[in-house]
Amino acid sequence: MLVNFVTDEPGKIPAIRAMLEPQFRILPHVLQNDDPRTGASGLLMVDADLRRTDSVERLKRVLQIERTNPEKMFVVPDHLHVMIAQAYALGATAVVSRPREIMSKLAQFANEQKAAQSDADIVSPETGSSAAAFASMFSTAREGKPIDLVDAEHATVQIINGVTRNGFNNWLDEVRRHHEGTFQHCLLVTGIAVGFALDIGFGEADVRRLGLSATLHDIGKARIPLAVLDKPGRLDPAEEEIMRRHPAIGYDMLKDIPGISREALDGVRHHHEYLDGSGYPDGLTAPDISDLVRLLTIADIFAALIEIRSYRPAMSRTDAYKILCGMDGKLERALVKAFQRVALGGTTPALQPR
Ligand SMILES: [Fe+2]
Ligand SMILES: [Fe+2]
Image 1 (cartoon, rainbow, N blue to C red):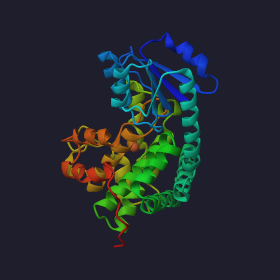
Image 2 (image 1 turned 180 degrees about the horizontal axis):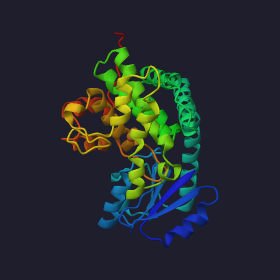
Image 3 (image 1 turned 30 degrees about the vertical axis):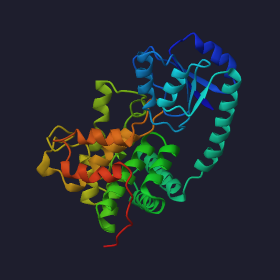
């Protein structure tokens, strides 16, 4: 089990390592730094002076990270009631003092995590199948072969089924738990776009149309070098320039495929355009951006914000939605408002044949 050990005293790290390794994997973080990032996974173990306001303020920032394991164990010196109270105020799930207590709590958490993990390891058939279809589509594209629309349609239908049968929130959590990188992103964008379309009452044919566009939207990334595509952290300006080519690359890959719809091509090429003309690749403005693309862009940005990446914490759905709300002028205000229920975890209505 991974233990994120957060402390304000680097000197405590060797002792905690000596006590807990190799039974537990320790990832130390020192609160002196401005922005200690602990990652979203693993248990959080805090050993800091909670009487110091600077430590408490820094800790609050760490605690805002949405964690896959919600356990937060605080180590406090014996009888320091003020620190015990502060630990619980910060959301502690356990407060311990002695090494023996630390070991037994950690063992208990590890057992609980193992039990929860075996439940979480069950992947629904729809998610497994859509992920496999995505993998096949991307490897075909990477090899320079033409995209098979049947693969893309299959992936889309599986995602629609996954969202409608399992419920949008469960589906979202499952994808974030089991998939990484570009696959995770494409699955999420499609599921979010589908969830949004269902929520605002799209008929079955329109849900499928939007879903297919979302499935294919980043296919151009299959031709972006992996060193850029999978780079952990921010891209430099030259890499950013390469990455910004993916909508046009995707469009070129698909435009001659017999039977591909105008809407799908529109979504692939224009999902990074903004109403105020500041997007790319064509710098379109509001009159030239279709409703479907407006919706897809919202799903794309929201998915990128809430994705779980190994190198940065996932943003909460609430914070991601706040960012969308702050993009007034770029995104359609009425659509962002309508997206609120889906973004913040409302229910997904059933598919309406039309
Ligand atoms: Fe994109
Ligand atoms: Fe995207």
